[in-house]
Image 1 (tube, rainbow, N blue to C red):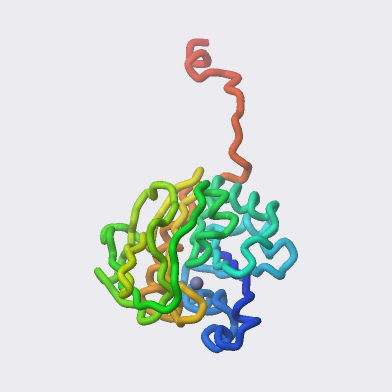
Image 2: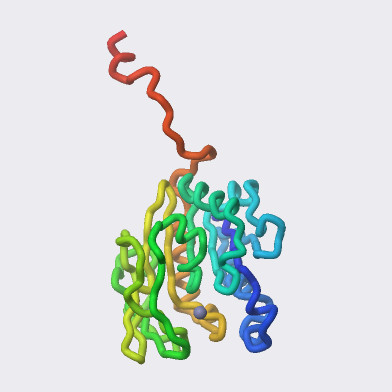
Length: 243
Ligand code: ZN
């Protein structure tokens, strides 16, 4: 069983009528609904308004993959929770950051660059698969369209990714590294650009397939229960052999 925690700041869908019309129960519930249909996935929800943003030590220790959507209140995520998320990624927890979560505190903390990009509202995107053999691309067409999406354009200030799985092309002429993977500590990270809150992107079957694949890909292969540290080697292996 893969234990997934879906974290959503859950602000736009409560405060803006036009966003509520797209995601009446919030983006997290839309994602929870299609992921919850997977036999081997168990879903939990956490939001900004919960105590400790719903991401206590116990919750994170019991999370294989954390999905993160945020935009309006990135700065309100408390630093202690950010460090906790970072440490759990280092210990093996997977992290999937969606859309404007490129600019979230955990992503900045883990990746270490400015995470800036260029953007404008209202565009048509064509998502191209740039790594068809990658597990996150399994069953995903070579290219597909998102009829309405916010345009994100290069230069996207990320560290060199392990893999560029998807490239987004926008009708306005921009291109963007839309699906990129990283490794930090023992944890796998996938950043995926589609998912602006004004458009029904997370209802689209290709998007759901990619997120499902990413959950399976990001689940820990090794999971530590204690923070990574620098223990002294008190008994070197070779000297132990000779005694
Ligand atoms: Zn957006």
